[in-house]
Length: 243
Image (cartoon, rainbow, N blue to C red; front, side, top):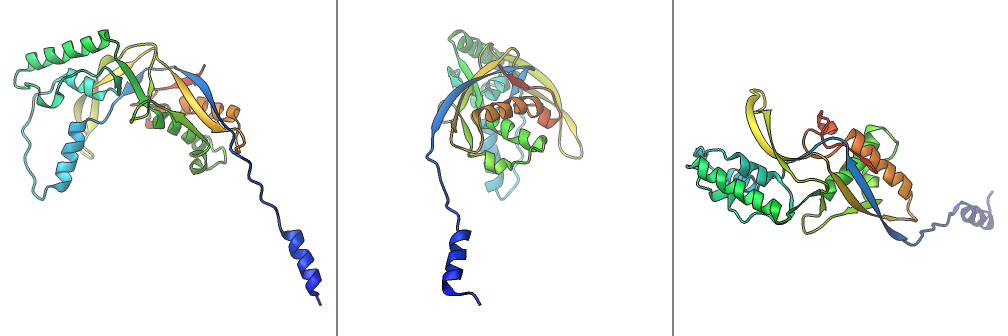
């Protein structure tokens, strides 16, 4: 028969002490260099409002077909940090294609001349690193990795600046429409010889080291990538490596 003292001693032996180390927050700069062109495609405000109208409307309204202005689509596809052209893309004189095209081209060229800066969402870069752990079955949960490091960006949209080159217009034929898979054209911005300087913050007393974090970022650039037609989406664009 166990005595009270015996049971107390056994409970004491089975009790472990939980030690939580203080956060040792550090920040390092990590440069990544693109190994394939980066195609960006920001979600246009006009499309957001159109989706909201469709969700809130109780009746289907036939939309008037508008003339396509490729350069307007390119401008709208870019993530602008600063220097975005002061042009209303939603109210262009689309009935006059030549005029609307000239307005967009002049506004874009002026923005480039004035030193416009472009970026990519920091969340997309972090997601590439996190998902690489799943792709390579590294045995760590992607949900756990979310809080182990952060990539800082600029402004309310948290953008990391794309450096080394300026965007060029790109035209692609895509297949959309579910089962019908009808062909359509997409006009977006492309960066060819690009690089980024990432500001990575992490807890030095955390479960993974900065070396492991950098390896994840490097792996993410190889097997996941960022932007359109990246490896994660059956393409080979938006790939990068840690310099």
